Length: 283
Image (cartoon, rainbow, N blue to C red; front, side, top):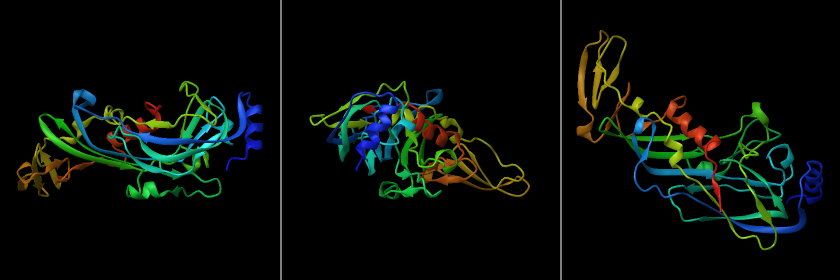
């Protein structure tokens, strides 16, 4: 439970206004956005999303106009986390924002992992465990040079202990224009995510390879043909991945779908979009 005396003191010192002391409990939901039709990524590559699950929470709203130091004590918060199907526009009930009345002008939240003040290890919440130890799982396909390329991406989104221990990883800024009046009759709040922006900056062309064997290569793709290479660059074996219902992953060979690896441009683009791209809509 929020300690309202501490919260009120922090707010007054920060120059904020309109903070009440009556307890409030606001129904909280989260929802996604319907993605009808293909999404265009870099170089106008069409993308279809089949799955875009996101661990969301805990979530806090603050009196200050910028989340951070002014939000050490919150107006209201939801202290749990849940997996959100961001392809489903129907709101999913999460719980309640519990706290005190007042004018919330900023917010902050995590994605299934919580940075602790007293421990360098992050706390994994059940929502992240449900996603296999990740904050998000994105699956879909991109059409690269006429070839359908299935892909998958997942990663942990957690505040680094070396950056600011104990602080949520997403915090609104002064340009976000967030406003929520907390009182006994506040209408239910829905946080809506749009996963289309997560993949729009990915260069999917790097998932296609058209090479032949050379020295010091073990496997390469010649479009959708896997080539197994010998030590002198000779071709030892050819496999038509498409005939097997598979796709040829560069330097890997035939696979069900291509995994966007850590350090790849694609995975970095998704991480950046979720953490610092278009913020969710608050309805």
